[in-house]
Every structure is written in C-alpha cells, then in structure tokens.
Length: 217
Image (tube, rainbow, N blue to C red; front, side, top):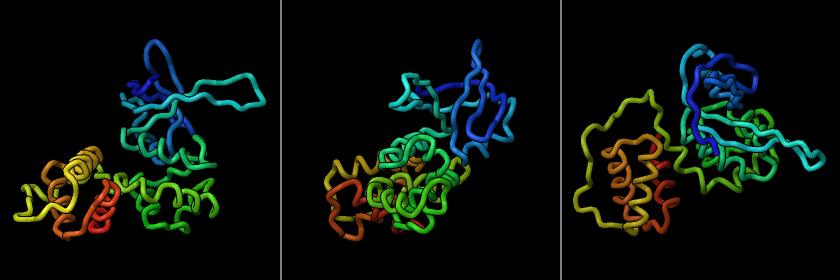
C-alpha cells in the first residue's frame, strides 16, 4: 500500500497530475480543489497523501491500479468517509470535492441538500444520501483549521470549576480529533471547556464535536 509520495510536479491535467518520482513518472488522481491549488506549483517538489485502488468493472478482466492523492492527510480521511456513501465512487467523490473539506463537511452537518446538489456529479438524490449517511460522522472535518489561519487564542483557556459533563474517554478522543484537524493544544482545550460549561451531557465524541461545531461561526 502506497500511503505517501514525494516528487516533482510535472503537469496538472483535468483530473490527474503527473509527478517525477525518480526513476519513475507517475499519474495521480486529485480532487478539483487540490488541482486548482497545484496549478501554480509546476516544477516544485510536493508531498501527497495517497490511496491505492483498482479501476475496472465486473464485465472486464482488466483492472488498472490507480493512485489518488491529497495535499492534506485529513482530506484523504474525509475522502475515504465520503466514498462510503452508496453511489459515490472514487471519480464522483473527486469531482464533487470542489470546495475545501471543511465547507463540504459543514454543508453535510447543516443538512444543506441544496448546496450539496450543486457540486459536480451530485444530484438531489445523492445529496440526500450523503446527508443521511454522514451527518453524524463529519463533525471533526467541519472543524478543520486551514494552514493559512493564525492561532487566535494564544493563551490556554481552561474553564475554572467546570463540572465534567462527559466521560474522560469522550473528552480525550475529542481532544485528539481537534488536534488532528489543526487546532493547537490550547485552542482544543478551550473549545472543549466551553462546550462542557453548558452542563449538557455528552455521551459520545460525535455529540461533543457537534456542540463545539455549533458554537463556531
């Protein structure tokens, strides 16, 4: 399994890019969003987080190995989740990912079928399936912090005297999820403490992340 590649970007096509990975030159499928980000980086060395799959169909004995690549590991994780929806295969998911993952995840969280159905290859019926399948699974992705964003809350903001309203495992796993999408240690603690201060009981990571997401503009 190839999970990451590094090479010199040689070309950017409509659906795939070409990398020099000496002594090979390889083609990697990318999302439309990443394709636009890469258009100005031809000639540069880039890192991609990859997934391997076999392209073909049941009617043919020929199966072609393909690589799908993402500039961010968290985008690869979202793509894997996105493809779990019936009717959303690799090619359709890549075409649909025309916006940052955070925006797509928030549309799913908000059950915004109208917005989702405007993405290439996603009609209203597919959008409804996406919402039904993923609404409770994409909270973490809706909290992604862009690499270009600056830390607003530099000081640790620990709530004083806040009674715990979630099991320790739920808090710990939520903290790890926030860190994995780019939040600093202090910001992750601040977001969790603010949610816990509501005194609402959180039985799962999904419940706590959803409460955090709803408080973020």
